[in-house]
Image 1: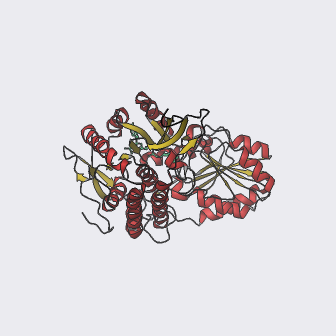
Image 2: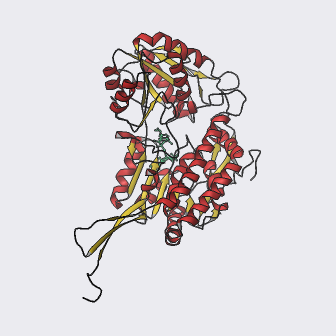
Length: 495
Ligand code: NAP
């Protein structure tokens, strides 16, 4: 079905298995709604175990031929997919805004980021180098091969509905793996649009398969239990990631886990408070706070607390909430009722325990927003350890300000979390920048930088934020096994 969005949103036949589009076996579909208005965007096939098994079988059958293709041929397919994604960027962004809710400008940025993974891994396909190791024996040669792990299961979230897919599918295909992808149930149509362009780019049948479903449990179990699936790559919440990793252990799958975060931002007294507040506002309200790298605790040095807070409140006052395709809108809706309930509960808990709301603090229903799940961009002052927001991932538009007095205290409190994904520090003192960035126990540190991410750089966390890295040269390692080949070489061909 073609829509005003410009890209096909299909009509229930959203399973891509062995190179063909299918409906669910029993014809079951589920609705996809615009989170800003509640209006329907389309319907997706509701796959179950049988369709998942067929997708795994198709990926297993395609693995041999695809892994034996040259790296140059695999790179060609990814480059063509990159060209198609770039050509369709505007339509893909419009679809993302309808299905996921983010403002059009942010959706355009995400499509560019998603396309970057296709081009980056198209090039990395050609750099899967092996090696040789000096042997202690004169009659032996040792060489190292790097080979694709096999069939991969990918499970992705709704908050970055296109880039989280290319961040997995591109390195898997580049390495010579085949994949079965299960996207989030809120955003299956963005996944369909990605798979349509992969198919058009000349991917052979079975190399990448898409299973849309509203039943993640039974579909996930098939993916996790299948001995043929050799790797699980998951992006989502820590709670779900822990369950999936435990189940994947029974068949000893490789696992990559990109999980939740609770990023600290430290603003030191030598930083420019106005500049730091600008950065805090940009990264905190990005994707309505629904980003794993969103700062959840903003630690501000007491000498500049008032200047920083005033600048942040003034910036937050200029944000405009609304449907992402409305001109001038800078903050979209939350994804669903559960997200709205969680943000509301965290703000109520903090205020009850003494936090002061300086902006926002409640749901927005005026100006035609009642049908969506809009929460006013919020600033809370005087947040402390007793409050839920200090420990739980918020995933919403709430900036929580925590005052501090010394550098050591800031680092200690920033590290006082089970998560370890992104962290930020604002300082103009070089010594402090080095000390603090080395002491922060996180996979990513932004020093006066609110976007320390790129397809060419490794992204990932420590602690309960996960295992492994996506992007960069490290991103393809996750899809490769290392093989040692020992070769006995007789001293003379005639002995
Ligand atoms: P989620 O609830 O964990 O869901 C993520 C994916 O897992 C979805 O496709 C979901 O399917 C699926 N899933 C849920 N239960 C499952 C099961 N039992 N078996 C198989 N699959 C299952 O997370 P989310 O709410 O979509 O995403 C937000 C979370 O992702 C946040 O914690 C955020 O920090 C994290 N995140 C991390 C990164 C990173 O790079 N570290 C990036 C983006 C997001 P359904 O949609 O059908 O439930």
